Amino acid sequence: MDLTTRIHRVELGNLKQIIDICDDLSLNYFLIGGSLLGAIRHKGFIPWDDDMDIGMTRNDYEQFAKYAPARLRDSHYFLQTAYSDHNYGFSYMKLLDRYTYIEEKNNANNARKGVFIDIFPFDRIPDDPASRRNQITRFKLLDSRIILKAGYGLIETPLRRLKPDLDPDQIESITDLKQERDQVMRQYNAEPFLNLKNLASQYAYDKEILTVAESTALTTVPFESLSVKVPVDYDAILTRLYGDYMTLPPEHQRTEKHISKLIMDNQVFQ
Image (cartoon, rainbow, N blue to C red):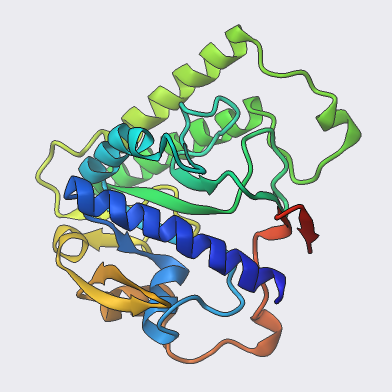
């Protein structure tokens, strides 16, 4: 069994936890990005992809962040947020399997590690292009400051490893920045705008914008051994992201993107 297949097996366990909690709390989630593509094109994981992405509208996202930790307390899962892990710098949360340990490519940091699923909030964005530019610029500036202060780096070096843990003053400073970043992300949610965006998206700005209708009209499709929620308008969403999304990429592009080492069951897999 290769590294990616082992990661997929663990991620399915993470995904079932998320689905069960959402069902229990009457919350919605939907697959996004490559996970949505995998569900539609492969009825599961893209064979060479090693991560998984889920979206939630902001209200469902906040409810999940609030109530999921209690439901995970006696499990081997950890909900990693900007506030549950002081060393974690990103603006979205991850569900980690604590029975595993991973090393990621180009992402050296002191945050907790484990096979994960990313959970992204979708927030309302304004119609005015200038207001959109202002918001995303402020978000990216705060995001970069947080990542820098939290000690993230592209590679693990002896100097980075020897850097002391964050002291209380540093934690307080970073927490203030994280709260300011959250305010920027949520600033238009009380407005009647009809478009939502994953502000932390890896794609170009216009690629991962959903209408309110696209984010709330959901259907169920097979995903490996599970059934998962996806937007009814998945064709329009995937076409915006990838163009002719049913055509496989060239073989040289079929490589895992994130995880370089997995430790589980007292074994190392690379």
